[in-house]
Image (cartoon, rainbow, N blue to C red; front, side, top):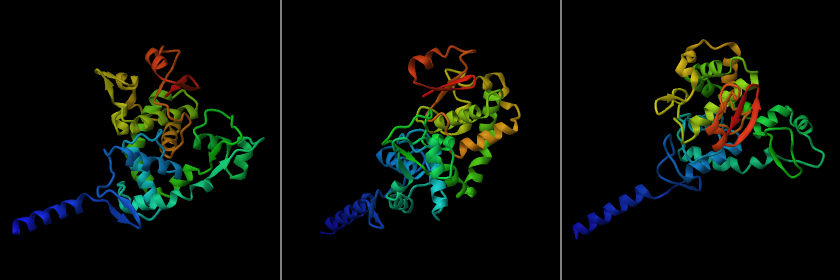
Length: 287
């Protein structure tokens, strides 16, 4: 009889440890989401954070990388939560509560609307609207829904997190921008930073800026400045500014993960296997 009671008690404990927990009326898994977590729960979290204006990476992937952690930290800082970058019950509950109010940040395009007209209504600029919505050009269509939530403002609400994020990341991001795009227009510099951050969030690349920069394929560096040593050049003011802007959420090339200069390289594999997005200065960008 005692054996049966002990077995029953063990089973109850096991069920208690694996069952979902309720927090403010919402059910969550007992385990929390953190770096290296994968799956549908991570994907939903990324989609919700993107809708709320906190997720600055490429399209949600379901992989909890460093950028997702940064996005969670910015959300936590802006909402009075512990900024540990771990999506536990309190964080998930707050995301779930706020996602319902997201509709007020969406604008439905009317006949005759232009990006300039919409930007005037929301006190922003056409360029910011393009960045916020990952638009490649100025063309918009009636019925299209545009986000008006400026991620740069969201980041400013979490300045303490930005400072924590920036020290190590600006150091390396500014250097790859300088070595790859020193002669490019400012938007092209931000675009290079955009690509590095997209790679950092993708499951196909490492999950820190430094590791992305020094990544190699069969012993060959992914970026030529690593091979020729120019990665260690001191970045100029514009490169540092561009690194900060990219880290703050500016995404002039959307989900691009590749770029090259067609005057210096044919980029055959990229052209055959990836989708062309746009050209800025001497660089073409692909996703």
